[in-house]
Length: 609
Image 1 (cartoon, rainbow, N blue to C red):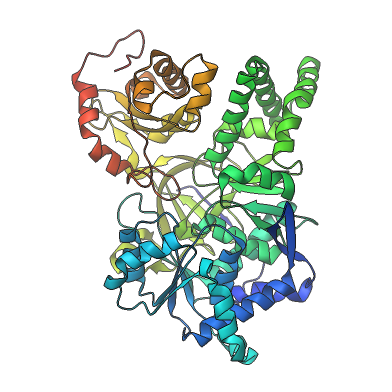
Image 2 (image 1 turned 90 degrees about the vertical axis):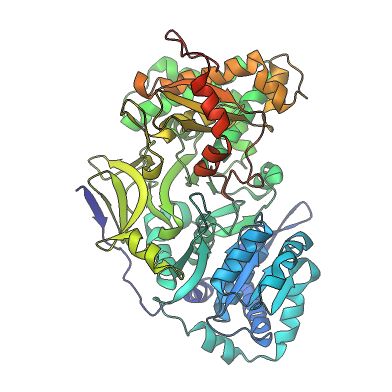
């Protein structure tokens, strides 16, 4: 059994809770700008001291409203400053927040509120309120529903004016490290969401150790970031807590269509994103260059960037010709991309799915080091992450301090340490099944190199076994295909079938530009595009590229382009945009069967099925 365990570098404090992180930040740097909020064309700073003042005032409002220590409060909202304000106000009031994805359906909201036993809920907008109202009759425990857009923060703050400071101090100090800090429900990619009990120590000890491990990113003067990933997800939630501990100035932009203008005015030093964001940045730049007749230049620049980065990473000498080409492309292409991201981004933390070496090397050549990491809701987000001073593109890095990673005999990744959750809420059977000798079974498969850098190779439950007995990890094929600009999603199939095939959907956001660049009507419907020879040939190219990395027995031999889009609303994607593989296999069983009952596979090329 291969095992790597890294000792914690910050002594544990079992009495500390999340509120202590803010208290110590205010004590150290009361005047430091901890947040910036949009104001006119720019941003208005909020100091650490001012943030604490607002947190305590809102906490008093929750106390005045009757919220008791340990009670659970649901929260559904977009990613804004107010999200973290409410989060910390509930911590200071002694309550436990239960975050809900802003895109959740009424049925999903009902399940989370009901299962958690939440007695109140904070909603951002009338749309969120309407969804809650639809199921409120089935939630007898819910006493209050507050709506931010109707002035709930001001109202609660006014109501709490008579609550003494000593009461807030008493409440915020009640919880110790072993107590529940929040109840976060999994995204439900493999069934009904389970509530993960994350403790105060999970956040406190992980924040303190991660801040030291990533000090070049978060512990440098002027460190700043714009959060746009939903804070209901543990990835962004942990970073928001880490930023308060480390003193990182944080802005928010819930509308990803406004992300580039926000980056331009805010000028962050690091970003937090999922691989799909980096794919979109790259693909948009490529298609924009194509539209301007400079597609060939862009692709040459990208090729040079990847080659340059690979040589750099290996410590090899870069040939004079490549250095000259790179310098030219840096001026023509890369400088414009850097400017589009605000001009100051040095690092990006990526998680949730594999990034791919090509994109990692491309952004590295731009001067943006993407630190890919790995974790789950059950590990409070990061269990491993690449370091600023030593990263290996294509891996998710070594274990964080205070964390142990090992591989079971079948290659499953198991984790223990400061980041691992306490239990599944109200589900002792699932909790027992999730642990093996005190190690959390992630369900993911991986491998280590000699330095302890982890590479994710697949998901245990998703391994396909063909009729010929060949084991195939879908992610190895799906990730490179999904990187193509016109591909929205892809699901590889073939369990107990004679060969591997794929279901593909198109990206409705990127498709019009690609169609225009290829002399086709930009308003072509998804159904018509699915039948287009040019579109199918482009998908074929993406699949041919993916097939080069696997054996013929593992390669995709046929595929079908579906005339629809998979979305969260359709029930085929989770809130973090991961595919619900089991739902897709069930809903498109007919299309899958058609692949295997139509014309035979060609041996010279992949048929378009």
